[in-house]
Image (cartoon, rainbow, N blue to C red; front, side, top):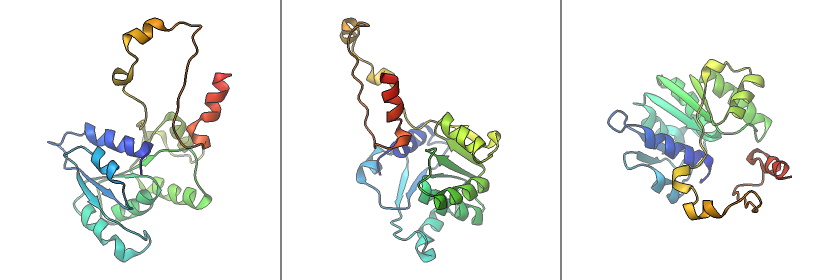
Length: 196
């Protein structure tokens, strides 16, 4: 589905040199076509369509994809819960988990993530807040965490035109637009406090 994790994945894959990396993106669950169109041309996309992630016989398409993999990056819960154990069984050289949030939907998911983190070579934290959560709440060693932001905009591409900058003054009203789910981790409450 569209979201920060998709944006981050596309950015990460776009920065890899296709001369050096043979890149495959495998979608465990159903994937919207718009997400697939965002992928760089050099990426091979595998639509696995696994309906029940716990049915071992349905994992065979994923095993085929992972068999010759050197570096596995798992993003979001289902990909991490399924990918990391398979990566270990298949002796993948480097296994990374990309953590996008400081909250967990429930205790079961938090428990699974604890196992996944411990089994991975490194955790990619999407922010310093996630890095801090991993070290303080989980006791995860700092040396096994890399901060790799998934969000943000290219300010060169989205900066206001020069004429708009000329008309602004400290007394002008500032309009802020933000789009996202109304959940704690999106920081709307922090934004409202700042606005006060």
